[in-house]
Length: 515
Image (cartoon, rainbow, N blue to C red; front, side):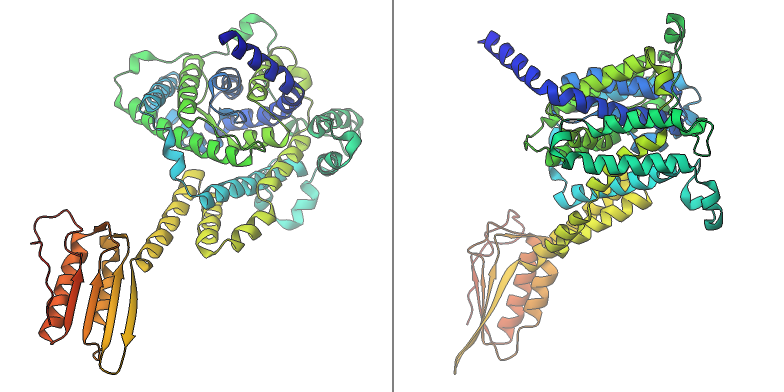
């Protein structure tokens, strides 16, 4: 039986290789500059970024509960990592915090905390994807124009003079190829991003000595390893003598919580993009991330998470299984050891084009239109998440979206707490208030308002709790208050199974029908 399962797995692996290997090359090309950029933004050695990407591919993907997720250093953690390295005073001390964070994530795995992601509204997740797409586009525009600074930091009259037209030509041509090639049947099997990178390498040589020449700061830059000693000297190890340092534990808890939440959000988003609509084992993902962060911290890497940019590039490149993520880790390792000179000839402009197209797919205008059509209660949390993430960071933006979603839930809950029906005849003016299945303290203001504003001509009031499974004590107190008020005014008040729907013994349970 076991042999049959292994045989089936190997068969599946071979079948998916034709999709996974080309996809892994795309992910590798996207991941390489991101690993370097995140390491630089985090104030860590550049090698740490590549090492983290390698571990995310070879270690995390081999354990992961997701078929399409790709792990590596996360842009959402850069500010936290930068501040932690500075506050702890030494990079080896920070690495100890990363190791501990991995251990804490493994504890979350044993606590079966992987279902946390299920509590995030779909409108917030879609808003997160759209915001990441817009952020990617904004981040890659300078590289596409061959600028060394942000577009928004340059005066408009200086912008034209600052553009590297060779980079712009490469970027525009690459975008055309990325959009056009998949639409041509005969070229569909050729990975367009790979063609784009080859085009970039060719342009690097062709533009030399011309006004379109690509400058050195507009190329990928990775450390060049010429010997085994050079390779071994790149590794840094954690300082375990700081194990009792409370600041290390604070950083570790912060990284563990934020990295776990980002991972679960990313996994949820990737599952929505999966053409095969598979559901990932989120609990197992926490185990994979825990092992990955322990390994990364032990050898000098950065904290890692499942990252949506690389994962979405993986999906869009046609990956079928986690083999793609594993191979991307292998390509990162081989690039570092065998081909650093060639890799350093790739213009950032062609990589920017790959990310620009990826960003557009995430933030497709059709997504905004479709979400708007689903109703205000879906669109407002969606657009709020988008705006908040762009202006702040991923976790803050998601938090804003969740709060707004909860406000809509509370509003709908308050509106649907009861039905108010008036019945009139020549001699009788009657009001029937039918309570819903669950009546919480949040419904108290609406119920109080309705009971307070019953018309004077009404001579009989019925409050029906027969459909209710639970009525909050506060609501019962309000009902009893107005029951006494209207009895004193000479009206008929009937409470139908209201008082026995709460678990508080402080209210005497009795039925009061008065005429």
